[in-house]
Image: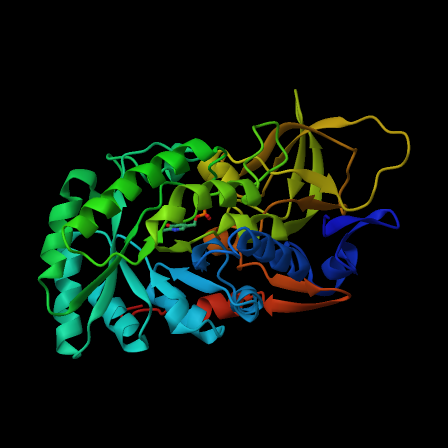
Length: 421
Ligand SMILES: *Cc1c(COP(=O)(O)O)cnc(C)c1O
């Protein structure tokens, strides 16, 4: 069931016409579907309904508080990587007892905030971080529950820039130092060891690296227990890929992922923690943009649209593929045109796709860029003094703006001329 689909010759988000949203809110704009968010969360949790498990949505994929609140209502937890994300998750109504804190560079003030909020667990990535956390916990008269994020030295992920589980990556405790780290943590008064954590990468389209990670970590859990550690949880991070509509291999279904994980972990007697981000939000959002000009170059056709790399950086950063189509269904008979779809920014990297066959489009036409719900708005910037674009959440026949478009005055308000000017 697709929630961005044609009705009466044009694309709707659930029951709302995208053309209407463009008219009311302006373009470019992100549009998210409540029904899709809910379905993805429900599909994922259904795969683990018969075992103890916490689904902690990875806030960084799409951190809008309305998205978080939609998931919170269903019982979802959160994986946060900054103090700001922690505040977002709490603001959206996600209970602290369902919040895990990941990240390789947590600052002292972030740890203090998390400790005071009584979050569930810190995923600790280094011994210096552990020492700092211990110190802060003691000063607050608290004990921090921790899991070490271990680096299993496994290659995974759809692009070099989103592979995180190899020894050369900055993430986690080196595999051969893990047991020593647990011994050090166990001796600390301000630390309570509760689990093990891994996260090997993102947009993973195959179960093999997940299996390898579970296999390795399962053996580690046995060794840690033999050494007297009380390992209660096994967090296997996020990373499950989603279809982007290109011809690459289809990623595993959540149900197949679930069956595999359950089969491999059933005997371990642990609570599983999952940190899916992209899988929940990616296909729950689109970027809606208007063609500014259709330009004929000497050897190619350009569609210059009003969205740019500052709004959606995935193509520039990860060579990511996004499906695209006009909001208005093309007539019965037409010849496709091969376009480069580009934004207005003065960078050659500001290109959404090259040599893509699309129905003929002209200035004023609306274009949908699909699968933009994760790592879209969350990674946007105001480069070229282009205001952050609004976000809209659709729910059935209703929609509301869930982040407003700032004005140029709003942007300039934070800047100051120094006294000498
Ligand atoms: C980014 C990230 C995730 C989410 O990854 P997805 O590929 O979006 O599922 C989960 N855990 C950690 C630690 C991350 O950094």
